[in-house]
Length: 153
Image 1 (cartoon, rainbow, N blue to C red):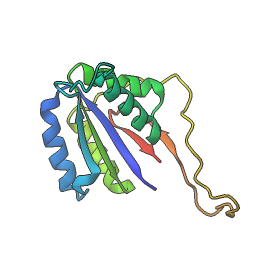
Image 2 (image 1 turned 45 degrees about the vertical axis):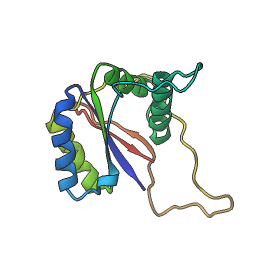
Image 3 (image 1 turned 135 degrees about the vertical axis):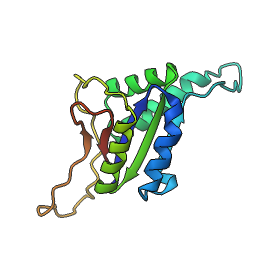
């Protein structure tokens, strides 16, 4: 089951170092992403709202992996203020190590959301027997006092 560590950095200058260290852990380049708000937004027509489209798409993707509305809003606001997001997806031990790198470089500790946990889609196939011998967790995993947040989806 994929597990993703997400971290917001106020100082976008450190993000290149964070990404290089995470890749050095053996996480493939295509599983480590850096995201900043674009410096300019291309207008494609009269009813084009490119900044809004960017933010809506980001909120949708964050929600898809288990972020609450409040967390997604915090991430978007951090990007508006010149910050950067780093996403790292891997197996437990590697993503835990990636989160440690993120935290060492000053990942922002978002306030714990007071909102409800997001609804995640159920993935069990209809008629499939229930799995009783393995514990499967999906959703948000917060670790108090740490900047990186884990999402299991």
